[in-house]
Image (tube, rainbow, N blue to C red):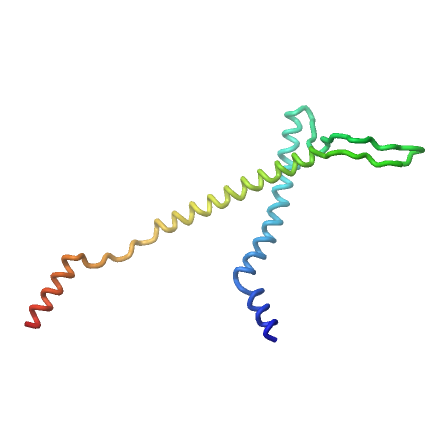
Length: 139
């Protein structure tokens, strides 16, 4: 029973639940960014590069062998275009996360600035005058 209680304490802490929500939202955000890259940005880059498609870029090490309409040996190739696509995805995701965090930090700083300052306490001179008055009363 102790093991179950420890697991329950761990699994249902606020940090673990927050992290799980972050992972789920991050996965969905990754799909959105991948769609932006593949559906919006890459066609524009392809247009600017005269129709070049990064995903199709590869260095063929050995071509496929076809005999009688059937593939006997598959093509061996280094798919550097796919790598370039993933690097571009990474930079766009990193930029998006950076901009969102920057916005959140800016809002947090603005909220701190709007908080009223703590009430001012008595100055040293006022404290000394109060102590002097109390001592006079005792004498």
